[in-house]
Length: 223
Image 1 (spheres, helix red, strand yellow):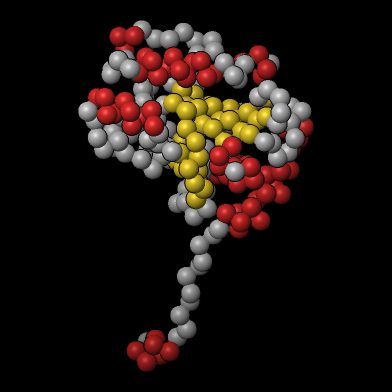
Image 2 (image 1 turned 30 degrees about the vertical axis):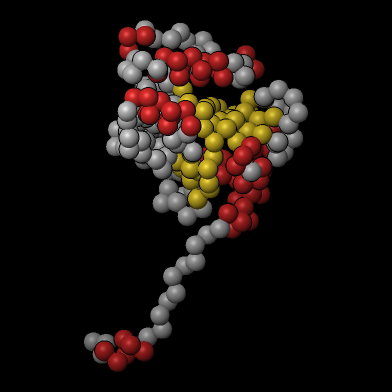
């Protein structure tokens, strides 16, 4: 049995230092480039690109990666969304388990996520706050991430390999050059559902805005 004095004399093991974004780049950037650079070359987009757009579809649990330099957006690859909670419709309040809908930016990169790596969205954005004010809603929630792993509540769980690719891409080109469009369905070929499904009524306007934004990413380019 170890005595108290012996326990006190044992060396204390220091806690592991938190990772930095630079640590993640050092560890993963070569692997990510090896996986993605051939796809960028096929799409005739330089690596790393100038801008990146992520387009996530709730109904099919698919995320498209698009990129550009000086020309039009080019499709690079698709990711399968491993998990997301909720249903069609925007996030309205804390605890509703909904994934937001609309266009967002990356607010920060978290290299120490409990889900491997994560990218924080700027939900609620100005549009979300404006609609909440008109509705008289408060407590909109927050902390919406794109992250690794396969479990999620209100976020987009992409699996670890996809999280590495999206994290490294964003770190290389800057958060301000990455947009994230989240839509309930692919309005490039699917019609809008009946307006009676929308509560509150402004959700129809939101989906019109999303459908218009989707036109920047032509479906035919994937064929």
